[in-house]
Length: 225
Image (cartoon, rainbow, N blue to C red; front, side, top):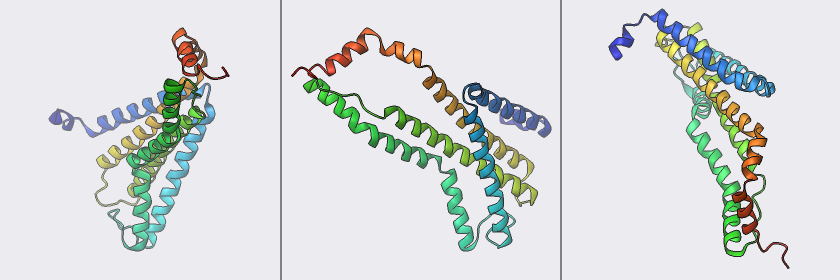
């Protein structure tokens, strides 16, 4: 497989990658366009804002010697720039932090609901659950967009200033990664919006006999005094 890929002419590989990136962005944006055009505009606004800020920061860092011709960092300014990039690219830490917030916000409520309902029959449904889930989704999407925009801005700046080691193949691979990250954010937001929009489906599922009986049993002693 590796020999097969290496035998593909570079222009052909670039054309295929551009087509795949365009298709992924088109599909993920199309999921939101009809009902949630504001989401698409907001994502693209944030992406271009971050990309431009990353380009400006790289330009300032290069002028003052914090970034050299290989894209490496030097001095206090370089350390600050490196810290900002690590913050932007550390998606795993972001997701873990957001999950911790969700667990702290909903975990005690769910535990209280189960314990008070099963043991005492006086349960109340968790509050603000939908808002917490929405905050989690939007936070993850924000992190994906920021990572993608930061990467794209640096790639454009490094390519224009001929950073040593940033050849066409590496730049193309990084651009494809940035595009995939952005498409993932749009896709995640699109899936969330479609699920939240399907209120009739959710309502019909919640109106089945078992959920009604379960809710009634969990609150069987509420209002019986």
